[in-house]
Image 1: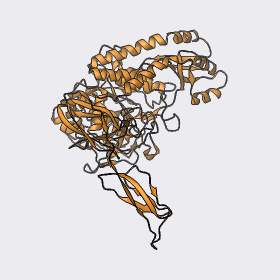
Image 2 (image 1 turned 45 degrees about the vertical axis):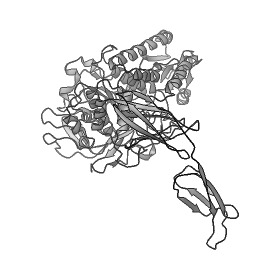
Image 3 (image 1 turned 180 degrees about the vertical axis):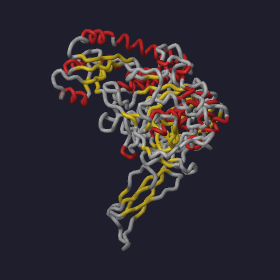
Image 4 (image 1 turned 45 degrees about the horizontal axis):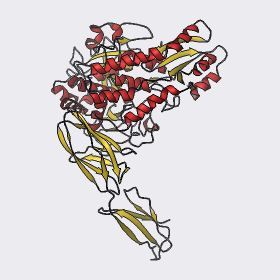
Length: 623
């Protein structure tokens, strides 16, 4: 239960300002496409209304109020629907009047984000953009799966009886099962190529066995009622989330007790105009967050949506916000959303994984090689940070967490298995499965708390702390579930030095847990409940401060602190060359400090002011 102190005010201001926009703005990429259209040609555009639901501030308010998941889902989904109905009414009426004209090919409305997709001519789209109730008009970009690296499958590869995939042991899933938590009572979802509904590792736990098929399988391409896989990808990822064979007892899934639903929408060979664009993603999220179209029911709503797709690099600007609201809406309604970081290695991240508006969004998953479980390391292909979508070094860290993603053993269509698949696509469903286990242990954990626990309990296998290779380390299923059971609170506040915000380090005495304040001095740290802690606040040039706090249950504690400037001493001396003559222009650097280097003068003299009470290493180099 934690909240950056400035978040609500900033979001509230943004929400209040949104309605004053006077006309829509056409994105540069869409404007370029429009300029190349011939008379009568059409293009797909996403029309975002000027008034958007203040989803993030609502999410934090509900988090603070500690409402149940049932209350959260009904409130958020109902209000999203109501906003779209009211604010889109005039535009929808006008679009209906254009349906029999050559300028409009098709249109559809969304409430998961307050938007309308229009396929129309340049003249029609430009006319829509001039409306006062329209905010942004964007290109309907192409999306695609994060293609895995697949080695040749071993002939006749079948699992031995009661086999558990190695990645499951690496993250501690068997230890969670031993406590009695298998994901039972939860529902998981992937937006992927579909799932082989006849596979023995999955068939018995498809929710459609006992519920209407339309709530359990989304197929906008062929409108079929039984799950199938248009490729192989979705069956493999779902197997990692929840696979367990009813015939062999083989376990490929982290949460083998969970039920599942899926959307067969990514990279569909028959998709045509339906498959492969952001419109498809909006359709899928809108279906997944409320499959039965009843905000008051919860049995149909997944606890987590696993996504192993993104927008190809070089097409959409990494930080484009076109469908961020849809992701946020799912999470505000109670469903966690996780994304594969990408398989571009050091070349950066895809959208939306590159998003860095908070420490939680977008929750990107990196891939690890755990072939030696005692020595995991980041896979060479796993996309790395920093994100280019924020100037704040705390928010730039990507991925958020990592999981096994090399030679992952899981189900493939036709009833078989393969250990030949590698990619962040394979890592992400491990995290989705852990979220299912957490919800199995504590059904009302909200998404903010879930993500904070995952980051706080990650295994720092590299010894380097949070970093742009593995994020917060390798996910630890047992630690996540134990924290979920026992209650999880937080401490947050602002650290200042002589009254001015400083990006201090906040650590827990006796624990490796630590966070760095943002540029405004804000920090937030999740901590297990019913425990006393001593916090330590440190920053170069200031006297280290401490604070004693108590976390009761899942309470939020506010702890601000002002650090006093440390007294200073002067380090001075003379630099000589090998001939014992004074050396002008020597550069003296105090290592591991933010101090600017000093330069010796014509007499070789230098002087550096340093905080008292510490030992320093000084490095001198000649010009």
